[in-house]
Image (cartoon, rainbow, N blue to C red; front, side, top):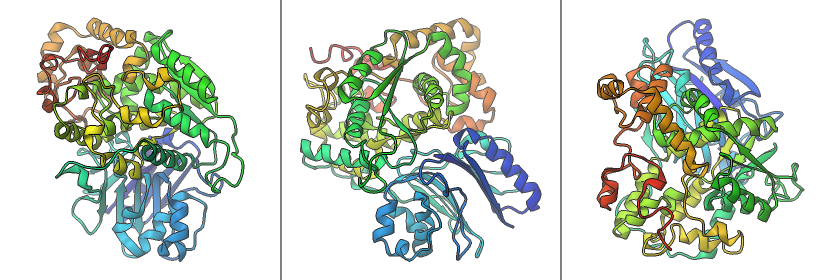
Length: 556
């Protein structure tokens, strides 16, 4: 994982512009502490801050095509780079200069132009510039696992960066670059390239087979083990992260990079969990770690330590969304301790709840059609919630978070399943399809553990402490004026108001505020789901435990 910064369609003198790009790039140096690179041309400048995971010694960026001179800066990982080099004619004919997994993008560009994204399997955001003809290309992975922003400066030049904070000094109109889109200099705006039948139209009818689900997820985890540095496993003690960790441990003894022909460079795998002292997640995570054989580290934090970190969390995550900040704070604190151990990459369990309807309010779905439509909406919104949290809270300390549930191939498999087999309710636990597929791989207590949102599982006192702190900091008079002070997505609670004031201090523009999803803060986060059950109509707390009648007693 790294950061990218680019200035495109520029007209000012190169030395001055180069310095501006360098300054913007260095704002993101936490994402790439291992090396810096920059290339300047008459009409474009491309910069890169590197976190070295694959080809540590020779994979510095921007990468350059030795024949055309095209330069490329990428943030992310291309998991199918080896198969592309072996089987794709464009890659077979290309004179690779490094072992970087990202160099295949340059090879594909020569033959496929913007169509190169159809061949990529991975998480990525990239900028490519071709000095031969002045053309540029920007792309972002289908789910938006990797963040990307763009905006224009006063001269009309286009700026692109991994994080919004790198652009706020230059651009007044910062926007999110949409997931699953590619933007060529020949087009007026980004164009979507990731379209699937499950997104609209008839309901999927795929047959559920436990062994097939297990096989598909196992292949994804294997791909995500690619790397040349020590890695770790995030284990909350919930089903999703535990399944990912269990699979990883079954394949941790050999190197992915040579198809399992040699032993892993880092044979001892460390796992991590965090919570308040005595939290449910810490206890469950220890059970998982003992069962799968990791070297486990139970990390604790206090409510005050979390509160003290909130302003920096908001600055790094670049949001004022209540649920995201609640969950990002312990993850941010955990990342700092993981960094101290020399770990540079971790596997995590984000995405399963969206793909399989794992949130507790999904129990209220009246039928398979509405259940499926809600999973589609949740999957397509991941880039502004769990993906942003996992990426930015970890990258705040230079750690790459990989999310195997959101592998492109696994997403297409999971979303093609008949939604009726994924539904809970009527005594059936949520995500039963995953639980059945991994019977025997984890302790029964973990396989049958009810869904806990991360911000709940770290200890219920965390959310209670946040709400109490906000009550002490925000007066009734100030809160009453929230719609006047914050006309864009005004906060509905004092906690939300407090987060919003910190966001404003770091990102004061209206354009920055508009990059955050708005709307009433409810447990299901959508007006559509409010129709499912009367109990949600007056609920303004997005905690999973606030879903009355579902949390803790859904299937007793």
